[in-house]
Image (cartoon, helix red, strand yellow):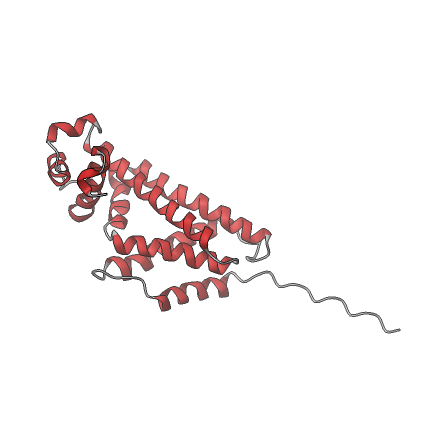
Length: 204
């Protein structure tokens, strides 16, 4: 499907995402978005009430795209917490490589739409926390840790590693050895619960 064949609302969202990421919210106008989408400015208001509304829609769409990409990656991953973590981080890093502006949009949302900013991270963290809790119940992650704490640790590390290798490096992709280091960090810091050795049988 070409860009011109997408529904008008989808074309506007895609144009707004790219412009907000490249120029910032304040330096982007509704007319700019419509021009990039190949639509008349007046058509915008049939789909969105304001620039603020489409900005919120862009942040929510990024969140939905990311959560879907990670869900699909997890479903295709091998068994085990480390394999699931690798799949999720790879999905996130690859999305940032293809759309390097998305992290900048999310960071700007803290000031443009603080409620949307918080919603974005709460949705991600809830999904991570559910996965961590399942891994704890399976004995793959130490159950002493609060899953929500681990979820925000994952989020912070993912954001900054993606920023460094996928955003700051033009056309960059987070290298496999960097991802290896991230996962090794988790393995050393969040090891499986040590199992007690079986008691020795009494001498006969």
